[in-house]
Length: 228
Image 1 (tube, rainbow, N blue to C red):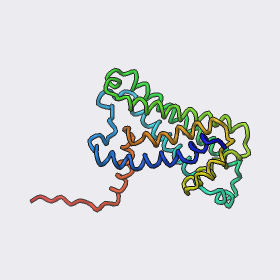
Image 2: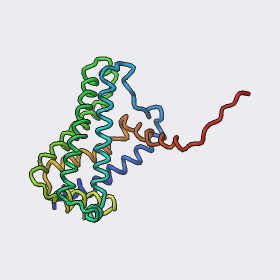
Image 3: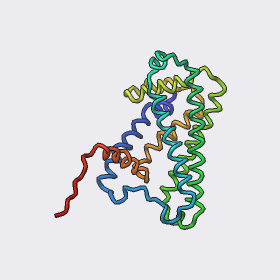
Image 4: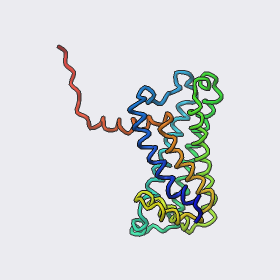
């Protein structure tokens, strides 16, 4: 196992997560006026609703699928009687559907961002980098479906699961060994995905934290407003 492989898949994930959490906290503490999504709807609302719905539904489903699929222990799937090949086929199907949905939505949003002059001129280089980065990550993720289709035994999928589960349990050096020989497309997709969390605090994506926080408003007691 090379030192480069060990760095990117045993140490780099923790660097990305540390910047993700502490960078977001520092951004909220020091730059609250920049803590927003910077919606372009006031500049031009054409195609925004369609692109937003397709992208957000698709990408949230893909993220949830990655989270559950990678972090659910193998023994749990075995206890349910779900074979590794069946789980891989499910991941390929769901990932293909929702990944394609997110891709179409993203292409619409990219077209608006780069082709509409009013939006383009009011966009920062970080806005554009973020969209291109997500596009590359999505394309790499979708391309792994064709690699997985070449072997439906689920073996490579189980290696990725064990890597992720070792990472979250702080066993990075052991984790890197599992994916030493997986296909290069999986490694590139993983690198792009990890780096997304690295750049997250420095982009408009920080508004996602506010989206999670707003869920707690459901459980907040009603505010009673009375006239004097």
